[in-house]
Image (cartoon, rainbow, N blue to C red; front, side):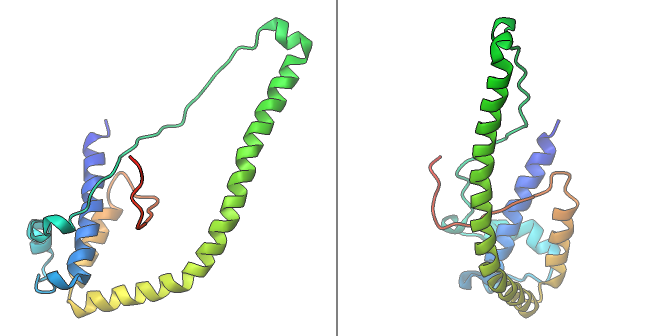
Length: 162
C-alpha cells in the first residue's frame, strides 16, 4: 500500500514550498531558518493563510494494459493489417506531436538554462544569508530519502481547470 508514502511525499512538497516562502518572502525574514528542528516543527504554522500552498488537483495514473481479440472473420479479410496500420498511425501521430512539443520544450529549456543557473546562485546566496544551510540540507535529505520521488515539477502563474 502506498498511502503513507504518498502522504509523506505530499508533505515534502509542502515543506519545500514553505521553506522557499520562509526563505525569500519579505514577510518571513524574521523566522529563524538556521535551526532545522524549528523549521520542521513550526515553519508551516507561521505561513499566513493567504500564502499557503493550494492544491488544485491530484491525479494518480498507472500504465494501462489493454488486450483485444480480433474476430477471425475480420482477421482473414486483411483486418489484422488494417488494425495494426491504424494503431501504428494513431500511435505515431501522438509521437510526432510529442516530438514537436519536445523540440519546443528543448528550445525553451535551453533559453531557461541560463536563468536556472542564475536562480540557483541566487538561492544559494539566500540560504547563506539566512544561515539556513543545515535546514536546507536536512530537507534535501528528507526529500531524497522518500520512497516516492518527485520526478517532475512545473511552476506556472496560470491556475489549471480542475
